[in-house]
Length: 194
Ligand code: SF4
Ligand code: SF4
Image 1 (cartoon, rainbow, N blue to C red):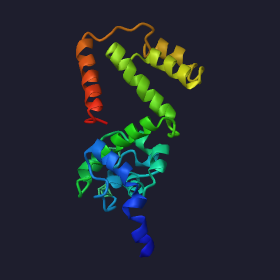
Image 2: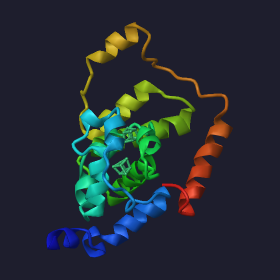
Image 3: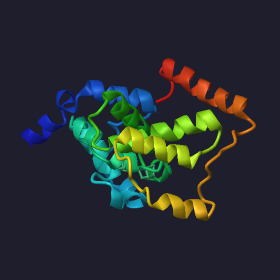
Image 4: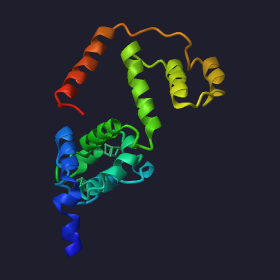
């Protein structure tokens, strides 16, 4: 009993980190009572080393570095099933978003840094072209990840089937797309978006 009290103290919890995640997500981490309904419905559960309910538990126990270093937060598909199922109104999907932001800011603590790189390049592509330009995405990923020949042999096959395009046209609505990115950047500056 004494140990249980110690484990749940705000000091052990690392209250500062929990408060940061709560501010970014707009959801309480501390309210979770470990019923497990979120994990039971999570479609990505089998790919995660920590199921969603354990992510919250690790945060409650101050073990946030394990969360940031793991792959679970990057496998989350943001489907919001967990948030919908939670009987205690814990918005776990928003918490996952906030944790990805924290992992990103921590620069390099995540073992899944290649997932971060892929996310970053994907969004850069959208901002530049208004749609995905797979050839450029693959080339930039291989170059920046140091895996120059990764999936190289797939290229000719995909080209022959018309799945990859050498040249690419920009989306006609680039101004609208730029507005979306700028709006998100402004919200982030104000601390209103993760
Ligand atoms: S469903 Fe909600 S209360 Fe239950 S374990 Fe998941 S986050 Fe916690
Ligand atoms: S939002 Fe993420 S953690 Fe929640 S159920 Fe969907 S995939 Fe799982």
